[in-house]
Length: 101
Image 1 (tube, rainbow, N blue to C red):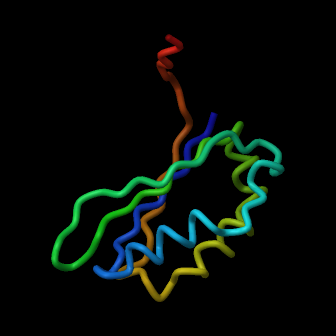
Image 2: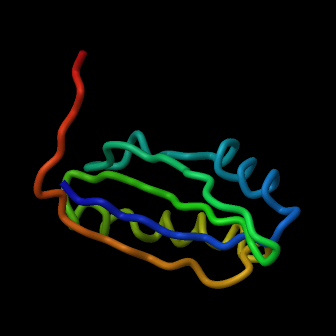
């Protein structure tokens, strides 16, 4: 499994629009080979920015790389709302615990 994350610093006042883009975008992720899960997290608020993180899980790094053009297209949709460029992080999932109860 492969995990891809982006941290976004959104200009205060643009939170609702940023979240709306994610919720209402025409997403085809469910049909992209290797895609497993996506989450958008809202973090701390400061005077300078509101911190968000996107979190996606893929079967493999290769599957993520094959979908990267769709990811870049999405990023361009809210470039004006971002206080600074997104910070990309990635990694292979080497262990996880799921509570199945």
